[in-house]
Length: 432
Image 1 (cartoon, rainbow, N blue to C red):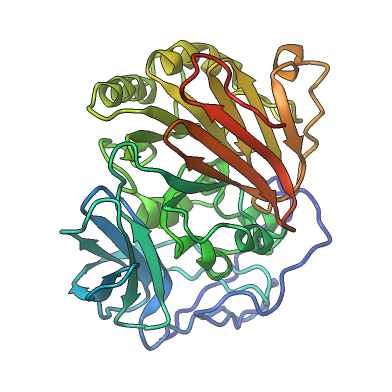
Image 2: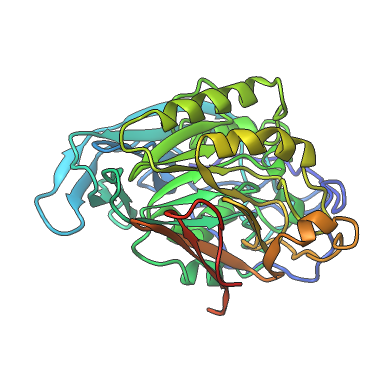
């Protein structure tokens, strides 16, 4: 099955990316073959739909204590069954899903060696797996393609330890995202993405090339993203990719841009800095109400809030000081202990009493100068306890009495190792 895609010229600086001499491996990407000539007057690109119909994925999302959703993208109507079995051993069960057809309008075909994003009708495939055991990890496999598999964990009972992985600004065509994912532990329950999931701005990357490179992350546990500015690079991109494929990742929100979920009595709030985020906004009112609701629930421990643009940074980028001043007392009132952001391509950790702010945007995009604003932001400079302009991911282990965090570079170097004491009334971080 082939679909024609007319060449779309996108000048290098149009999307605001920085120049780089790096290029993508010609072999990156699967599931399609770009036959266009990457220039004006070249042949139209085509996509070969695999016989299985499975194009991108799978990944898991929207999990609670007894259920989870497994989702993938298909380029043709196809088998929607998956086999699911407990990771620790046990009988497999079959689960049937549904396919929703959508007219995808986003097209991208600039470089002949990069698999193109081809417009046309695609089929979001979704399987809701129910009747599961709380605090249990499962493995699943697609019936349509036995080589496509993954894992997810149901929400932990309150107080049970767990780990999650955090990464932001993933641009595998430019930086060593693969190295970052090589050092992701195999026992994390889920991953949170801090925004800027894929970069058309790098020119050498498409969603078609991104998905194969990100398989280690997508198949390791539930994928719980937040919205970054690069989710809006092309017309219809947000609707065609983020909303269609990653929307509905969590609970308790009528908006696709923000949601919440919980595990182990820890509540997570994914927000969007790309829509109104400040005092008086619908999103801010939702967050305050949902934080209060979470804090009132039996077994509540603390909350983690994550979004794209940071409230604290000493980098060349602006920080959202107004939002921090508004949300700081709300965070403290309702037991938020950790705020995680991306946007800045590097790692920073700030300790502000009971609150720890982490920037973890080292997922592969061109790295930033993290000391550019030290002289201009002395208050924040006094609170920064760790920083590194390197590609990395961050693992957070939630224990009975503490949060332990480790930021690890793409080559295995530990950039930061810290502990947040949950029994103490103050503090917020050790290590450095």
